[in-house]
Structures are given as structure tokens and as C-alpha cells.
Length: 191
Image 1 (tube, rainbow, N blue to C red):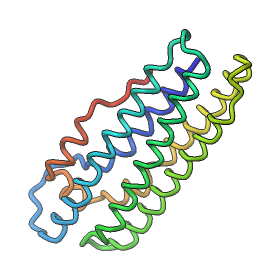
Image 2 (image 1 turned 90 degrees about the horizontal axis):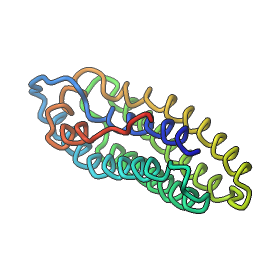
Image 3 (image 1 turned 60 degrees about the horizontal axis):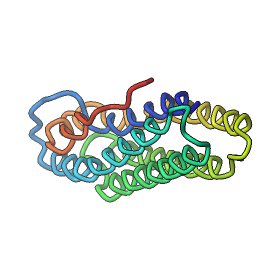
């Protein structure tokens, strides 16, 4: 009953892992490398927190789980994700603008998006908390609605982060050990 929710959630992990840069190039911009290290070091523990939340939800997908167990697990997972995205937004904000063209706009857009995602997960937590666990059919319907919203949330999440990482910023981030280890975290399966 919770499989669709888990599948939708796995898209959320992609967002954080997108922050970890994928190309590998030797950047000679010390300011940018310093910025990338600061962001990557802050992202790594949050990426792990989001992975753990995804795993918790997936572990609670068996049809043997009671609605109360599913509700409790999902609620905590959404809270953790909300906190993690907020922390990543704060990290990008604290790091300042990356030393690239339009760096300030890239930073502002990414922070705004991360904060919006954090709020969206907080809203989903509230919705899960409000579901009626006494009526299994109503509960399942409620979860379906949440999974649909989650799907939209994970779809909409990549734009500003992708823009933040274009060009030299992505290259600098790819060089950081903490970003490399964040991107090698096991990603949630779409089961």
C-alpha cells in the first residue's frame, strides 16, 4: 500500500544527489573550490539523512504494516527530509554566491527552491499525521494522494540546483571528497 509513496520518494533523493556534481575537471579557481567544499561538506550528512528517511519508508511498505506504523514512519521521514532540505538551503545560503557569472542569482534560486522543498515536506508530514488510521481504505486513499504530491515535488525539484551546478560550479563540486561520497550513497530503488 505504501509502495507508490516509496517510489515517489526516491525521486527526492535524486535532488540532493544532484548537488554532488558529476563531471571531473581540475578547477583552478580557489575561491570556487573553497565554496564547493563548504557546500559539499554540509550536504553530505543531509544526503545521508534523506537516504535514511527513504529507506525507512521503503521498509514500511509491506502490506503487513499497520496504518499506525506506516503513519509514524512516514511522518518522521517527512520531518527528517524537511529538516535536511532546510539545512542544505542554509548551507548554500551561508556559503554565499559561487565565484561564477550569475553566481548570486544561482545561489538565491537554489536557496529559495530548497526552502520551498523543505516546506513541502513539512506539509506532507502534516497530511500524513492527519490521515485516519482507523479506516484502512481511507488511509490508503490518503497515502495515494500524498504519493501524487510527492511525485510532483520530486519532479519540480531539480531546476535551480541544476542551474547552480552548471559549468565551473559543478566541476568544482565534483572535485570535493564529500560530494563524491554523497553521490555514491545508495539511491532508493523505485520498487
